[in-house]
Length: 249
Ligand code: SAH
Image (cartoon, rainbow, N blue to C red; front, side, top):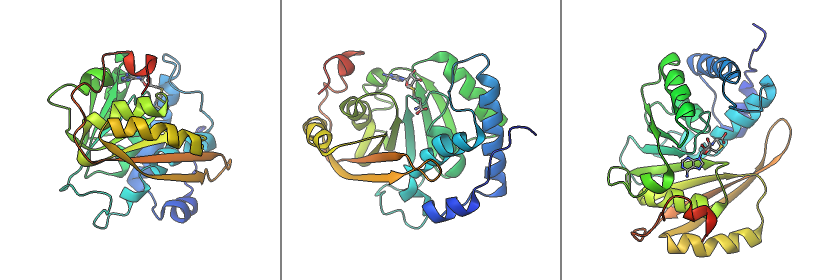
């Protein structure tokens, strides 16, 4: 095998107090191989080196949901089990697929507007025998107004899809009251927090916490923003397709 992912058992343990089972490690490995293969046809990711893939795709995806990995009565979740998650703009499946592998008791919806990416993910789910996820082709602006999806999720994940206020407008309408949006960021400043506050208020949320951390191999800075939905999102949000990015809150 030329493209073998590292196991990093100690780093998983030290950073997230968690380790993959043998089966989960095999699923990570197979995921990596399928993405390398898929990259030949589709522009899925620039990150192909095994260590870098481990850090920037696997570790980073799971760091955002670290509070859920500790399976004790999850303090973050008021909802009854099993929690419903959605990954908005999942692309090649990040953070959604590593989360699906790691949290078999959760159900995950993988949303992307690009049909080709969703077709690729359908194949991944089959190959990895993952039954707790389903895929959805659509735009966050439309899905957020759909009765089947609006206010239907306990947790909404979003990484590398747009400005934080855009991410807030995509995620908060989809959450049940008490639900949590997890926005993955690189750099983040206090000024950005101040600016985001207004958008989050309008959408029925509060900024509950912001975590800063460094990635374990390359020591790059990352942030996760945790937004709690505290009241209903007004019906006009999310606005029509394209508006959240053109006229961000
Ligand atoms: N979350 C992945 C992919 C980021 S690229 C990662 O972190 O690696 C951004 C993805 O979001 C693309 O696949 C794009 O098709 C999708 N996307 C962008 N705007 C969207 C929208 N409004 N609704 C749904 N998907 C969207």
